[in-house]
Amino acid sequence: MANKLKRMMSARQIQMIGLASGIGTGLFLSSAFTIHEAGAFGAILAYSVGAFLVYLVMLSVAELSIAMPQTGAFHYHAQKLIGPATGFFVAISYWLTWTIALGSEFTASGIIMQKWFPNIPVWAFSGLFIVIILLSNIFSVKIFGESEYWLAAIKVVAIIAFLVIGVLILTGVLHSSQTREAGFQNIFSHGVFPNGIGAVFTTMLAVNFAFSGTELMGITAGEAKNPSQAIPKAIKAVWWRQLIFFVGSITILAAIIPYNKAGITESPFVTVFSMIGIPYAADIMNFVILTGIISMANSGLYASTRMLWSLSHEGLISPKFERTNKNGIPVLALFASLIGGLLALGSSVIAAGSLYLILVEVSGLAVVFVWVAISWSHYKYYQLLKQENRLQDLRYPNWAYPLLPLAGFIGSSLSIILVVFDPVQRPALLWSVPFIIIVYGYYYLRFTRHAKVNLNQTKKFEEEIL
Image (tube, rainbow, N blue to C red; front, top):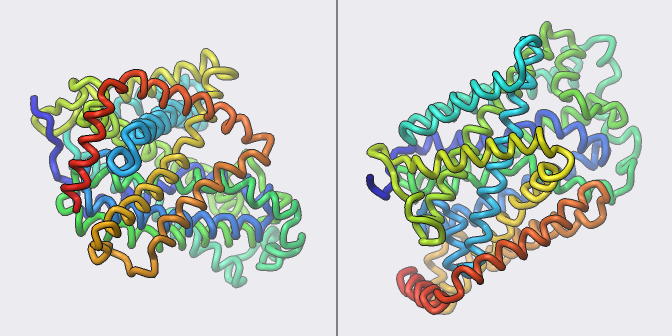
């Protein structure tokens, strides 16, 4: 067996992966929660701020991925630019995020299938989709990229159809007894912030979760055919499309559905489709949501596998996880991540009210910790080039520095801090504290004797970059 991945992923596939990873249950389902809590205008504001924050983080991913096109991306960047312990924490956090997500996606896929086949148990469908996702990932990265491309295409078509229908409703071309009063008046009919402006801030974490996954493009850098061109092109294309899809969808939902009637158990997209009498609206939307779930699990297994490979490649875990087959797939890392997802699935059944709940809360915040690390790594990279008078090597104009990475860092940090003010989400932050202590503590206990080696590696890295 070899230890190298293969550069087989095209720019077309990377673009769709970045776009698809951000379109999932966070938009299709959780958007109703945001509208209900923050109000119509508040939800639009929250998603607009979230889109801008994601854009800042993605610019940092692009800059660093071009300078250091490594699989594991932000883990590698944090390790070299911030410190080895932080790089280790980022990798563990991101692996945990996607592994826990795998467990929940497997369960959700089975629950949705039961709507059509109520006599077949959830575990049977979960098992079927586990096999499908494994087959998508185990043969070659090209097969994964192509399968993810077409799964994403279904979601994108659904969003575009919704945007078109929404515009037709708001302009009066389409209407029914339920939509005659629909219009932009709903956005302000109950006041700008019916539950107070504080509700906007406390929903920001949920909004960021809806956008999470876009950063996965950085992980593909080590397997992209031409990362210096593919990654920045993909990020630029994905951002403005996400802006239209997310902010556009939320604006239409907020305009059509009064905030106090936005349910949190039914997809707001189903509500809108049903309003104008589209036949089988619930079935169509459930199919799209199922596609989104499979897509998220597919990307999740890919991301967690590459993060384990990167940890092994950097000597932080057993070298066995670095080994790849003839097609460049780290098979052991793949199965370890899949088993992690199955354990998460098991804990959701055996200890749903304790262990699984804690894991979900911690993994939910973990992705925002990763955003903080990405932005800070970018800032450290800027400082590194400034020391050697090499700012001309930066991709973006001088006026963007240090504002661009610092704005991303501050925005991501505030998303975490604001959780303190929401009693529902506060436990996530409280459980994250011992998680951080354990991960950093383990690193220092395990690798303290290698501290001098790590320091020398960092200095060597700086010399290579400069």
